[in-house]
View 1: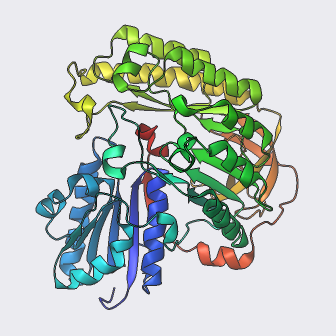
View 2: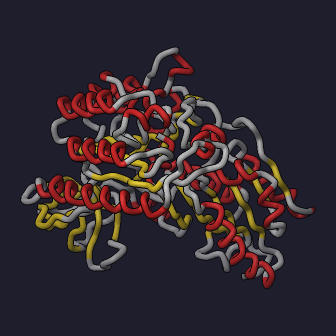
Length: 470
């Protein structure tokens, strides 16, 4: 790489919110004349957009930083940038542990990146703000997909879950005006998008700060009226705010997909209280029944924390019983790890690793059995897929997702990304389905849009849904 070249490479850790932030960071870099690079070696700017949810987040970051430092030693003009939640949490610690980093910025000042890069010519440039200065939607975006887009409807979180660091690094909840969201979706459709995912730390409380009452159901109805929009997804709702009007909107709006991610975290009322989740097992099950009564074919997924401080075998048995009753289509299960700046980190009775591991394995085995059962009901059915591209494990196959968010692999028949296919399901597995296409592909993405968006952009190492946030 020539040092005068202006190229960038972004590695993203964490949730969909981080992925969307990376698209904004990429958009700003391209507005400054940078072009994407395919690797850290080929980039003049290497940016790590960090997550602090998982226990080993900082270890992974510093391991990656050490690798890039060795490249920077050979390429002195290379700039290293650290952004995101871990940067917001650790602040000046990053500069003390990795003084070769050129720029550090937090979650509230993404728009500062071009300025901080320019300032770094005179030395390391560091800026962490306590509140958002520019709503992310106002920033340019370089999307990683021609047919799908993340759309932020709010940022921040007003909850106080004792295991979660998100309010400390993302701030208080702030909602966007509904008209701005609808206008953004309409612009995205003009650029070839057919599916959007609405993002918020707690999407169900969207609009409470604007109107005094949640407006999420009204937003779904507004998007249902947008001509050309094919699919709407959202992540993640908090069970305490998941209301009947949202369920009714899901059932009545044709664009809203029949899938909901409803994090439970534990089946024990005692632990839910310690977690400050503001609901009981009984109230959670009422929400599940409400959505299944309205949308019988809905797929429900969840997040579960195993080994929260003080969890007894009886508490864990209640979680297993809840999983058996709900029959989730999928679950993201996590072994509890203490995080700084959270109340749970200071709680007594942290469990031994071997106890947590054994419970985790029991829960995973149970959920796999249930997932096999849930997926088996699709055998012999024809499902509408939105094609996502070539399978990562088999270049002779394509992958797509059903409206219920099931991943399906099927033989490559020439269908392109962003097209819809009808596929007959011929085999089922715990985490994916297999099928055979039964009709010709229908093009839905303009070729001009596809050519611009298919360049290599962001390497992502993600946990689904910033799972500890909801």
